[in-house]
Length: 443
Ligand SMILES: Cc1ncc(COP(=O)(O)O)c(C=O)c1O
Image (cartoon, rainbow, N blue to C red; front, side, top):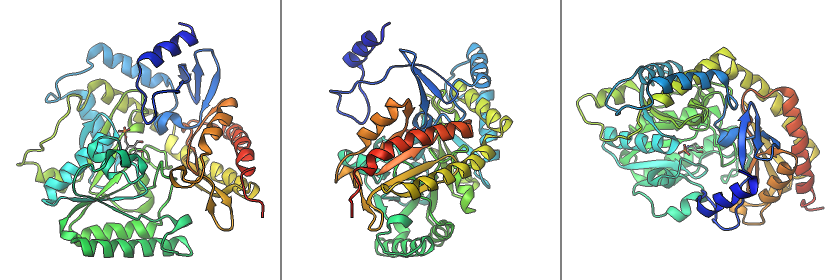
């Protein structure tokens, strides 16, 4: 089918997420390989955002495709009450890779469902109802997960589910509590959370859910002392710590799981995206032994038709084999250091770059109108002006797909990217920054 015909068909029937339906004309993608996507007219585009930060191993990996084909020939799906080899093997592999005794795996279709099931388990386990979640967060679009979400994607879904309370996590670059450095920011933020809990009755709180590094709200990396303090605060008050690794896991942050950077163990870890690199949908809620033990005699009252889907699990196994075989986790850590240096150069050179943050191959440029005062360029939820539309246009004109919103440009390529390809991306990003530099206040 010709591109124009396809687009017409698409716009006659398909409902798109997070946007008004009128006026949206998606680029039609035909195929993808490695770090590249090809549109229906044959244009080659760098996938600088790994799809939606999920295609960690790159597109069309032969090993994964072969494993999926073999599984499809044998069995795609059985009722979730049955066991299958792919389900049992993937659960065991996940258990081996996740920290400590996070050894028990409930499979879901994606990240939001993983978080829904995490908060259900936490509420039943503790007998408490409140869940604390950070303002700078995204946890998914289902009823509970969007209520947990701190960012404006939550607003249209309000009032949401009862019992969710938001708190300030650490944001060293823009600390609302006025600290001068990262460490102080962590300490002050923790002290404020402690006080908030005191007023709210900590014994009513089932869990605190956190992204270990904030994802779509700006790649904000908390100080290690904050994460250790958070773990201690939870322990002192019988609160479970849920770490949402949906975006952060599977090498994205240069470790199998990002929480390893902070030497703490959550009570529940949620994952999705990189577990299958998006070749097919899969997520998981992973429990420690104490939660597993609790549900030995009590019913875990939750389920999904596609829980432990055989094809998805086979795809997960093959993905883990690729991560290991190609040493992608270490590669992400090493190339992440390279990317970090490149971004620091941009920070020095461009007046519109206020800060750059990078952990593994997971990075963000934060734009400002004034470096000294840190005045935002676009502002929270584009409250000053929108620059991301024009940035996306510039990147796309140069055959680079990057996700940007508000003051953030996200750089999260597949972990297989080469340093030369990183350089190519940086060159194109500079064309976008040439535009944002023109918006900077001349003082
Ligand atoms: C941290 C985090 N949690 C949860 C989700 C929701 O995952 P899904 O879209 O698979 O439901 C996302 C999606 O981007 C995410 O980044």
